[in-house]
Amino acid sequence: MFTLYNVLQLIFIFIFLPFILLRIALTPKYRQRILSRLGLHFPSMDAVDDSGPRIWIHALSVGEVMSSAALVREMRRRFPDWVIIYSTSTATGAAIARQKLGETVDHLITYPLDLFWSVRHVVKNVRPELFVLIETDLWPNMLGAISRRGTPIILLNGRISGSSFSYYKRFSLFFRPIFSLIDKFAMQSRADEERMIELGISPRKIYSIGNLKFDQEGVQVGEKEIEELRRTLHIPPRSKVFIAGSTHAGEEEIILSAYGKLIFTYPDLFLVLAPRDPGRADDVKGLAQSAGFDTYKKTELPGLPESNTVQVVVLDTLGELSKLYALATVAFVGGSLVPERGHNLLEVASHAKPVVFGPHTEDFKEADAALIRKGGGYMVSNENELVKILELILSNDVLAQKAGEKAFQVIKKNRGAVEKAIDLISETLRVTGYGLRVTS
Image (cartoon, rainbow, N blue to C red):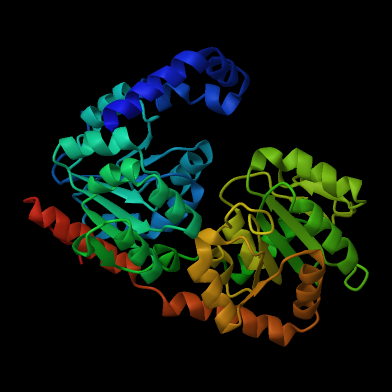
C-alpha cells in the first residue's frame, strides 16, 4: 500500500509540477514556507540536551495548538528533563505555537509534506522516542518512518466525525495499514471510541481520557485590563459588546445584517469581527463599510482621535481573540453557519460568557451538546434565529450572566483529560525503558 501511495504521489507531482510551482510562486504563504515544508530548511538538533526522552508533539493548526497547550505546559512543569519538540503544519498554527509555547518547548519545527525523502530527513534529525499526534493529520509516510524506528505513536484527543467515519470505512484497505502504525488511541468521546473499534482497531489499543479542550487554560483578564482593552478598541463605557470570532466567508454578511437590525434597539452595541484568517481583514472591513458602519481594523486604531466614531472593529492580528472574549456581552463562534465544521466554543465559555453558534459544529459536537444541555450555549440556523437569540441575551443582563456561568460550569465539569494524557504518555515511556523524574 505504501509503495503504491508513493508511486501515485510521484506521478501526480510529475504531471502537475508546473501548476504546483506557479501556485507556490504566486502565493506568499506557500513561497515563504516551501523549504521548511520540504524538510530542507530544518534547524539542527545537535544542540538539544538529551538528558531526557525526546517527545515529538504534532498539532496541525491553530485549533490543535490551543487544545494541546495546557498539556504541553504541564508536561514541562512535571518533567523538566523531557526534550519537547513541537511541530505545526500551517503558518497560522506556527504563529500561535510561537506565541503560546515558544518559551515552553525545546524546539518549534515545521511539519514536512508527506514526501518520503522529506519525511526521512526530518525524522532522522528529530530522532523521537515518542510521537504524539493531536487529533488528526494522519500521513502514511510520516507514521511509517516513525514506526520503523521503533518509536511508539499515540493519537491524543482523537476524533472521528460521521463523514470521516464513512470515508475511512469506504477506503478501509488504504486506512487500516495507517491505523495499524498507531500504538494507542486516546479518543475524545465514547462515540469516537466505538467508531474506531468498528474500523477494526483493537479495544486494547483504545483509551478513554476525555477531551483536552475542556482543560484549556482560560486567559485570565482582570478588570483593569478589561478597561484598557475597551479603551484600546474605542468601545464606549456603557456599550454592550457582540464578538463574532473565527468567522468564514459567508458568515460576516449574516453577522453584519443581524448587527444592523440590533442597533435599532441597542444603538451603542459594539461589534468585534474576527475572521478566522486575518488575511481576510481588508475584505471583511470592506463588507462592514459597505453596510454603512464606521469600521476600522484593530491595527488602525492606535492614534485614532477619540472623537472618531467606531462601531465595528475587525481583528487583523493573531492570538488576541481568546483574550478579547472577556469583553463580550455575548459571542458567536464561526465556521458554524457555513459548513466549516465549527471552531472552539470553549474559548468563550472559559470567560463565563454565553456562546452562540450555527449547526455546523461537527468538530465540537460534544461541547455544543453539553453547552446547550446546560443552558450556556445557543444553536441558530439562520440570520433570523441569530437576531432573536442575541435580542434575548442583550435584553436581559441576569439571563446573560447566568448563561455565561452555566457555560463555564460545562468546562469545570469535564476537566481532567490533561492528567490522564500525561499518565498515558508516562506509562508509554516507562514501557520503552525510560525512568522519569517527576517535579511535583
